[in-house]
Length: 299
Image 1 (cartoon, rainbow, N blue to C red):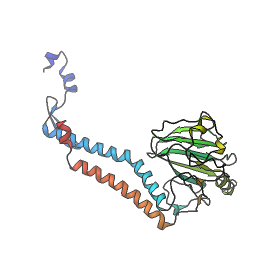
Image 2 (image 1 turned 180 degrees about the horizontal axis):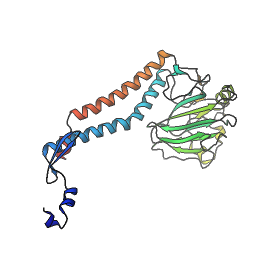
Image 3 (image 1 turned 30 degrees about the vertical axis):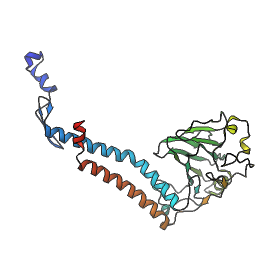
Image 4 (image 1 turned 90 degrees about the horizontal axis):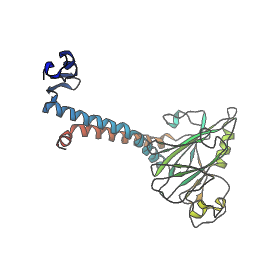
């Protein structure tokens, strides 16, 4: 169509028209009146496949990371709802990529498959404090804990609700948050007092607890939460002294206090993390090399 027919200048028409040939990093793209040639369309669809593969890798990396971390925990005997803590702090031998060596770490995975779980965080105010949080298994934020959380360092009960749960929930007394996945990863960092982690260690060791599922009667307030069983809904045993628990069975247990992972135990975890990431990389390469763009074109 000429400039005279459109009523615009030749310069304007040229500026908004698709050139017949465009040089790109993919090669030369060819067009006929703006429509791509078959070869150009195939090339662009293949590039879109590759881009989607890269997006899948990047978006899946957080999930692969936490899945490998949980596998590492299970591999050294730290079950879901157990607490792994470092009372003598971490150092380079711990092989945590982003951890520091100045705060007391305590870490756990929650199992939400049988209903909501409660993390009872002890109060730990100035001059120390707890900085923690809960993420879903895609590293998606669920809630903060401690100083940045709703308890503001005063301690409290954090009720984490998994996907698909439609049962009763308490009206008060808990900080309620919803998680998109059936497992949740949570952590806390407690600060030292006068360069000594011992005060924070004592508070966490004696005050941190994890509760199992509660009954509808307890949620609705017809029974005291202090008389609730930590696991079985039928249990009405008195509340034990505050300490970390293995929630899946309702039994109490001491936390796993360790200065660092022994190197022979951490390496399978790190290896699992790298192998999981490598599988995503191979999937991206395979998707691109199969030329799946032909299916996209047919649709």
